[in-house]
Image 1: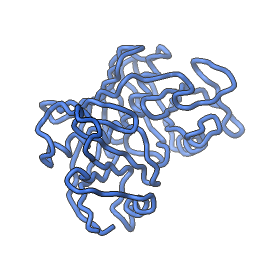
Image 2: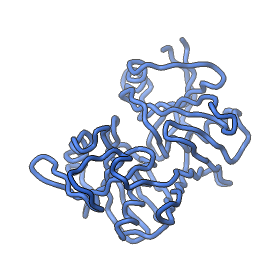
Image 3: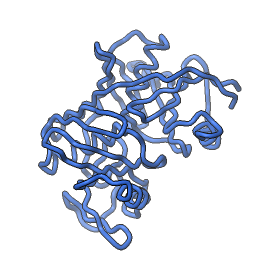
Image 4: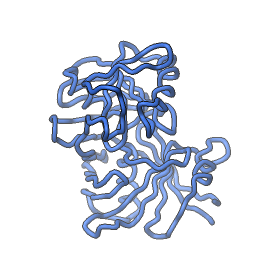
Length: 276
């Protein structure tokens, strides 16, 4: 089958987006792994599949697959690329788009400058929602990692995250701790790992080791998780500029019970086609 696709990125976190509204398209994990190969395929961090909604009150459904073929609940950078994709392809003329994901509903607002603001929903710090299975309940957890231990804040923003506050961001730290925490026994469904350097109450540097992918240039849900974790711990203000390797995101959160608002760009790279 000849597959039409669009390559996009959100601050360097790259996606292949496929229209399954106009034409039914199905993928198996082996096909996704082959397509994601950066030497023999197209290359991407995640595959986004745009589908008709199951609820007529919503505009679309979209599914998110990691490069290893696993399906995930939510993706902030992907949501922004999705919004730009459906408007540029003429699938909608709305500036406010309601979608369903594996996690639930989301609202996407396309702004006048072309940036997209995503209502990411309310976060949860309840361990069972990640899931996270420590021996005791706390606000800041000490987790054994090999011969050492790290302090982290677990938070679900539709997918599971572990946020570490660090003094400096180094390759050695991310490469050593990231994969060990991703598959740690205390995270039965694995976890995305964020390394946050606090510059001030309203500005942070962040690197994210993503579950099923590895470190990416940017992670929208990771930025949300880092900011809400920092606010919960008293380190950050309600509006924070997040510097990721691929660029910047603005994250706003007013506290318990409130939705997280993420604002940032989405960029089309090219259209293409490939045989599955």
